[in-house]
Length: 225
Image (cartoon, rainbow, N blue to C red; front, side):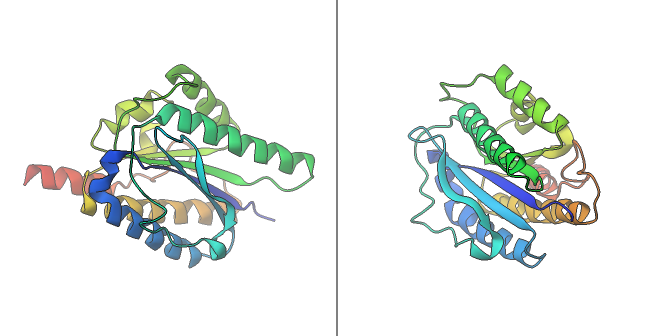
């Protein structure tokens, strides 16, 4: 049996995300609808992070069919950006689940960790950049996939410092249209990943977006105009 994909979504809800709040909500809901259309072979863990809580679990290993809509009541931007702590905690959470499955004799999941943020690290207390880099590289060696969608910052520098490969990083415009484009890119890339896993193929190591970065192209095009 082919592995099931488990998507860990790490969603920044710091105060600066307010400018694109409605489009983040709509983009997430559209993303879930698109993934449902690809079949039931995936689960979603959705984690929000900010200064007050670097790991608020909104959904825990939820089958796609049971994922509720994100709303203005469940996504409320506030506070700062503890990006390193949020990343370390979600990796630890995924690793614990993977070990429990192994000990129970269950088939391993194809793990994908995706970060969506508009700000640079500024509030972490538990993890530093070197620790996250080591974690990411270790888990990539185990077959995990990591992707980073960033707006309003140097996404490549921020993600690269945490060990993310450039092919799995994408910048997008820090506005509503940019957020919509980012979620659409995530939908496309996640669909490709799931198809590979269902076909018994390995993930696209270090190239989650498969060489296509339409959200980034949209940002660059609008910058030039």
